[in-house]
Image (cartoon, rainbow, N blue to C red; front, top):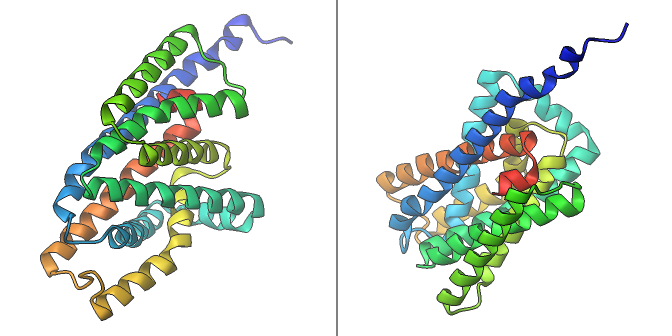
Length: 258
């Protein structure tokens, strides 16, 4: 027997809450990233960019180990690592997010926050183009209008900046490509981020030990500053990335970008 017509119309209604969840997670991620420069600003001149990046990796791993244990999702990590294809995607996404983290941290601690803002104005354009080219997504008329408005904003900000927006372009391209990779990689948000940070853990932890042992660039942080760095780097790295990765799995890439 053929199912009644009403049964065929059910999936869109069932998907509405899922789409709403994806939008909520995406908005949450970008709001947290918007606040991140305020957190990083007090670290300027006290902690080097490379050390901040390494702290973000190390303390994210600590949080993720606890999260994976509580939620009993270690099986997803083992599955991802056991698959060469999935591990390959995650190695690529790790490289992209590492470049993005370093660039963002550098501009945020060197008085170039406008570069980061411009970079994330460009990101929707990059994400939309990647979605159209690689995922065959089609932009609705209202999205085309939004694309053109964003493009006009980017051009205006670029002209106001008065310098070549190299850092902005690195941020936009690396993040757009990261979103694409996480969209197609067959792994859930927590497990994927755990693998990404684990790949970076050994070099990050090694550098922090070296910096502390030889006091390289003020590597021996006072207890209060170390606590500030540990808590903030872990939370501001892990929470928005988990939200973004989950949103990227739910929504179209062009929607995530905007």
